[in-house]
Amino acid sequence: MRVEFSNIGKVVFDTRQEKNPCALCANLRRGALVRVSKELNCNKLALGHHLDDAVNTLFLSMLYERRLHLFKPSTYMDRSDITVIRPLVYVEERDIVRYCESIGIIPVKNNCPADGISKRSEVADLIDQMEKTHPGARRKIIASMENIDPGSFWNY
Image 1 (cartoon, rainbow, N blue to C red):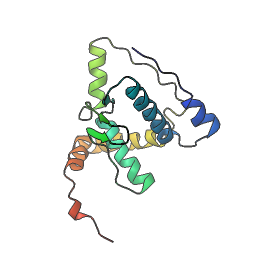
Image 2: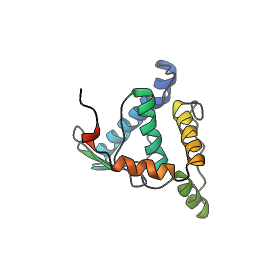
Image 3: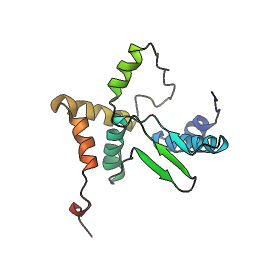
Image 4: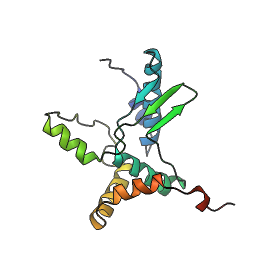
């Protein structure tokens, strides 16, 4: 096991003083993971994104970036010659939590100062509400992400 120390928290919160730090932090962390992967001569990088992350990311991009952005289970990054895989992207977070509990894995507390007070948290709450009103909403949203018809978009 390798632990990589960084100054990402200092950059995001002290130097840049981001009001909505999640995107910058995610990009910096992914960059660090890619760098270490290259140092270890790896050509695949497995990230732990799950179904809830995929749906939340889609809604974040629509609501705050005015674009339709989503990530795929596998993405080749040509600049780094690394393939990012997301093997848990079809698994709901609650199922991962239940499985971890069943085998005695105790989650690590998130020490991020923005944990629970970010736009991502707001969107997660919105999706939770949708799920209560429309059971299975997350799975339906994922299915719709897989069935996008590019011809149905407006052309300007």
